[in-house]
Amino acid sequence: MYAPINNSYDPEAGTSFTKRGRSRSLDPSYEFAESVVRQGFIRKVFGLLAVQLAITAAITAAFVLSDAVKLYVAANTWVLISSVIGSFALVITMSVWEAGRRHHPTNLMLLFAFTICEGVLVGAASATYDTKVVLMAAGLTAGVVASLAAYAMQTKHDFTASGGALMSVLFTLIFASILQSFLRVAWLHIAIAAGGAALFSIYLVFDIQLMMGSGAVAISPDEYVFAALSLYLDILNLFLYILQLVNEMQKNN
Image (cartoon, rainbow, N blue to C red; front, side, top):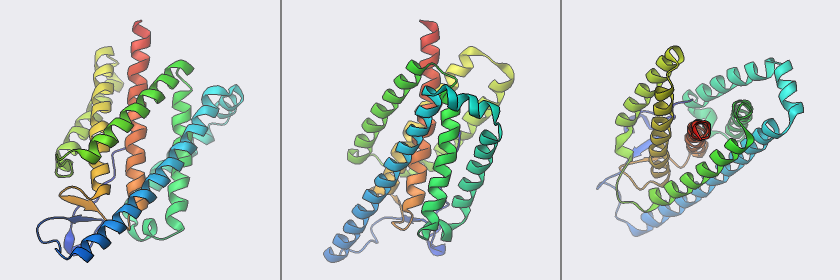
């Protein structure tokens, strides 16, 4: 599980986020130009996200459906080890190296290298579950994501001001997950999975509103890779928690 990536807001330093309010220009031409840029930014982010999810789905399908892939990875542990190290190294690099994640094609190379590493890890995790469970979780995730995206685009409630509260809940979830690794309590496992699914559902709405620029805080249009990465991690974490919940439901039936 990864924490969603969010920079600290600092308007003087020119960071990735800008605060929006009454000081914005009332010039119609400015508003129109800003709207056009934002719409192009949104299309670019969703385009990248679609490619990322397609790559991840393809790799996961190979793990779930192919015994040859499972046997190869089991016999060559360096694949998983390299993917774990690569994922952490790449996500940290993209988080702290602002120039790199804004510069084309460096930003796309970093993003898709990370996507491949994550695809391997998600595929390996999914391969430990029954194929029916994986398909059910994927379908549920798709439905939840579509519903939340529609909600985020039309709601008047501003989630972008809730970053601090969400981060506090995230740290609580991480602590509970560490505790569960020692206790191995069934009810706590279910509670963590349900809490994680709920948390990343809210994070998805939060990040969509940041991308759309409809809230108090908006992400810069230059940060299309950063925005795609954040949404991708939200969806991946949501899928993994839903996968755990579906598996528990199947075991109890």
